Image (cartoon, rainbow, N blue to C red; front, side, top):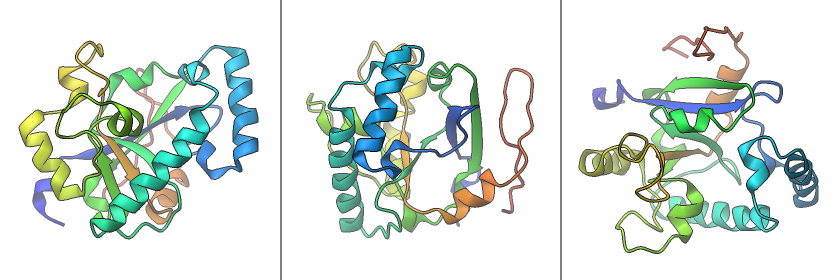
Length: 201
């Protein structure tokens, strides 16, 4: 892969007791709704604020994103994506009682199985304010061009006062590379717990 990707990383944040890349989207809708109801009842983490319609809307947006990615030449191997961010996002760490993170070099990914939105998939596809990156899915080469113009939302919109885009979201439409990372031993680093992984995975 081109050397221009060498200094870029994708991040995945998750609750320590649940584990990495555990997604409600992989469950039947009724099971996902039951889990989300339990999270709402606890009222502790960020996900407890999600609406009753959240899962049905999420399924619709994931299907739309997949179709758009295919139209741009993508070759997704999953019906729903794994979620990561392009670059670190400190705000996401606040979503969890005990957060953990995985960091993977961008250059390790096949561009055909990864798409991006400039912002979370929800506001990207639903927020109408005329910005050119709304309602769009980007390939790897396209998102890096976009970053060169607009920068990273997690840097210029840290407090969310400038719009709903708080980070660049990556949708990973494959299991193979992800499985290699979550099978490795986790090492806690004070103040920055994350998986330590070799660059040649």
